[in-house]
Length: 359
Image 1 (cartoon, helix red, strand yellow):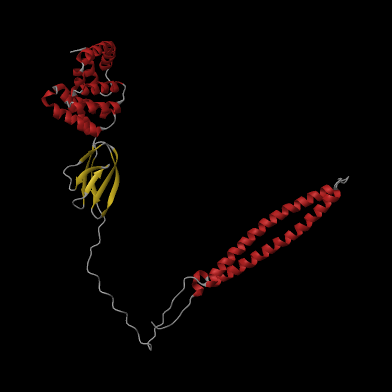
Image 2 (cartoon, one colour):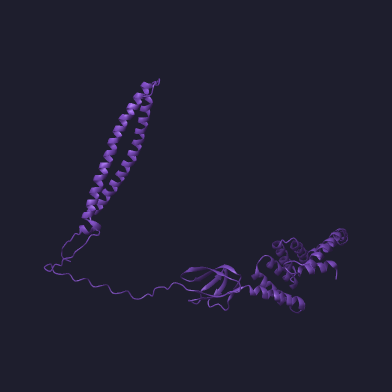
């Protein structure tokens, strides 16, 4: 048993959260590899020179290719590049399938947070390894499987119609009735159900660790087709000499509508009068202040120009005051008229219109 083999085995089979013994072995493994690189380079040059075409045939050996990918996966695992390491381990298994590589693939899935894939690969590892898996290693892997399964939720999916095609998170499970529940990791999952002639039904559910739940797929009931109902008989027509008075009530009278418009317009005019008055009041204050400055002794040098301007402002203020009064008067008239019309026809009650005639 070489130091390199022992360090690799200790690293690969260590727990996912780290191992001091594995780290120490890894440090010695790196030291050994650095020394071996120089020796391998010299030997490789000698082999290529002497072996010639035989070396070329050796490069195509599946086991040699698998070892290259396997060792590259080990190096990537040491750098915690689990995605890339998983690719290399899979290539190694494809070149030369060996159950031992499946354990490393399973550990990569655990490190990447993929419990479903890890569970599948660990089960394959025990099945393909069989009696070749050491008892201690088998017990460890079985413990890991139980721990993963304990965190899984179990979802039983049923449907109100047989033959419904069910998928979870885009993975097809088959048609109902399903043979067994589906195991899923905790978290959110999307269930989709498809049936010929019926729109696809999608639901999103949240599962907790170790939860056991049943999800029933219920499609909307389609209406039952039957023979068309017979056409209704025409209503009897009363003779012209037997009229019947029918009263029809309108829900809203015209007076109320006009009254509402007048009332709203009157309120708007009143608000406009208040704003106009405030604006004109400010101008009046400016006129008084300017008038006081012009009356001071001695008079300013531009007295004439400023006095003319202030007189024009006074005329404008007087005209604006007339507009303000007009707005207030119009507001009062409109509000009074609108109120009167609404009182005459409150809620359309005053606008009842009765008409008589035959059916």
